[in-house]
Image (spheres, one colour):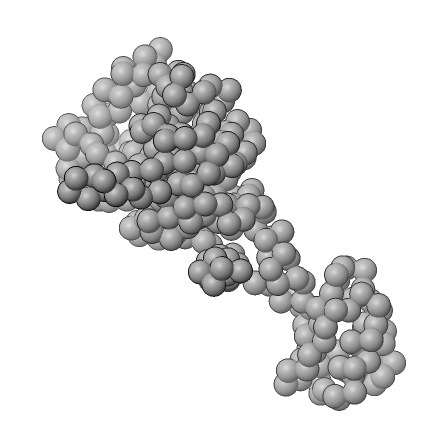
Length: 313
């Protein structure tokens, strides 16, 4: 659905624009149809620049990209018609009502039934009761919901969301997240940049970690395993140091460590190897209270990736 090959954007900066700054450097990416794809990176990493290229707001300096089978730089008008875009700071006509704002954009997109489309999204995003109020009187959360509605009026196949919940209160952020879930269930393709890594982990099928160039791309779970492996924690009534060596020598165990009354074991396949460990510990006299898997957050994965990039590893 979205494919990039060597996508690059170089800006000229300085008073005489003689200096060059590479915002996006040789991006190779493939986003599948119906996928919610998270594009993660620090401020200044080139995320918004990438979105602007893919939505034909700015032209690439090099490389190629296609969206829904249409080529960036050749089919720009068609791309703009088939995508929806929510920018980080969406502008609205503040003196006009929410209904009028949406109607203007629906007409620009040649939506067949403007009134039906506008009413549909006002209801879906819980803005119906305020539809006649000027947008200037709206809270930031309400404006953001209105901006989401605006991006969807023409029923785009691909939706680009640039920091969709930044600065929203928890209730408004939840409304936007729930709506993204609904769009996901409808099979829409969603390309989302966000600094909220917990949100990305919950919403995204796959994520890319990006800083001018691509550092990694995979499911959150696969990235966790790639960096940290899988660790199971056996909580014991008491820990005998000899049990650490016992478990470390079992097949499939890559490492074992005793911490207080816990045994932390690194495994290749916990589902298959846990029963063997339990049997060995019980036979050795251990009292197992409960077992849990140690899960690293996507935030830890993200920070480790960026640290490795800075260290040049």
